[in-house]
Length: 391
Image (cartoon, rainbow, N blue to C red; front, side, top):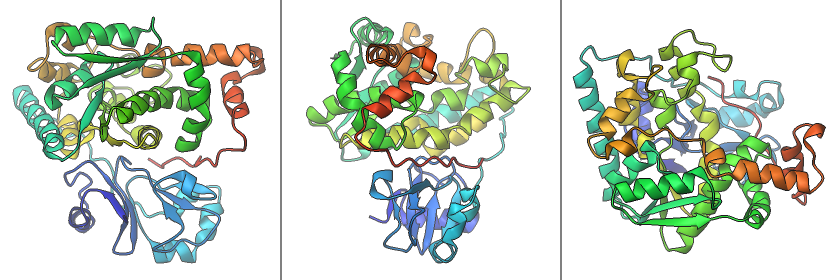
């Protein structure tokens, strides 16, 4: 398959009009001799820095298929002929300069009427989830008990799976949320040995060995293993909601983690981190044999998010204000109002991986000790795609 995600006709239309959100869930691959990747990088794509790129060779959807992978920047459409003729640019200090930017994330265009903006968001989420339900796939949901995955689960009416150590926040939150929603829940309880076993495969699949990326990818991989073993084809996730709708504390407090001086600007910064995050998560799920499904990252939902008025983003009292108001149309209030922990902390994977590192002699004083422990579990170096998307 030379193209993943949207159909060739949709991609051709986006190339012709310059529309960065042409409808669908993103795309990447080759169309009419062009190497393309959508504006949010929802489908990973890599080229091989070590050899000549051609229509049939030198590029791949997984970094493990290439000798020296470079992540294709999101929002680019580059002639394979041009890239093959100037492969030296991939060896420069800025290899992203070898790619031609064709799409950029649209500037926010807030609706004047908050009610109209909420209706548009509700309609977009229904359209995205209805599209998933219409596909011929058996889908399960990675369920943390938070509002994001709960809304996806409710709209898809799909089985719920949570992963974590027995005393973890996510397992308890998922149990209580599933009870409130009157839904059954499958709990994938972890042991330290699960992490030791999974770390090498996960690091190779995502092409990264740094502690944070591996800690985030591990829960996705481990829940995906169980979902695949139970016979499902796809794993649905609530990814994208925090970035699109103002779910992070930093977008309200405007602390050292953001450059923006407004909540709107900080939300946009968060959205622009997705092209770097999504390959990790997609590759972790795909390595289990499942297709990742992220309804909240469909083009229609992204477009509706960019049209929310400032008052429906976040403030000191409530984050993801507009998103929660729409979710409240489908979910119990106790689920809608919940905040959640990041998956690596809520599942206790970060804590337990840190403990394993220290038990194996990688003490915190040596610096980046968890990353060094991860690398020690690999027989040979991971072929990393370290070059990040230009924004």
